[in-house]
Length: 179
Image (cartoon, helix red, strand yellow):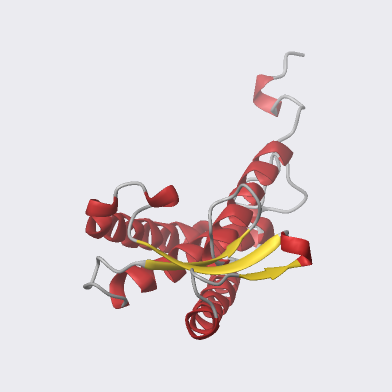
């Protein structure tokens, strides 16, 4: 590993994680409230020649409505993942990883809010989805945040950017070099 700065000199990015997480969480909540008052499954709003549709759908399962009878389990797992990511975020010193964690946590929290507070019961609530593209399932802002965070995980990993702010190098480490 090589780095231009000592890892200890880099600031922790926990505050950035929390701020970034709040953005999709708030946007998701606000847009879902708008969707609940203005859209329906029966009469979708078509934009851009039908390329984009706003159609209100609720989902009691995981992605693609898988496991609708296990909503409470998804809720508990999602809560555990968010808590684990919060704890792990204390180690983050890289801006890109802070943004990544924030997006994933904010998106997960957005859908968890639905599961906890929406009908039919706590931990069994149905997630509000309302955005649809051709040949794609209906989704929401929280889902977009999770997908963008996942894409950043792949990008940062391929770039060799570690969570502690160091960057992987193609050069062998000092101790591994033969003189």
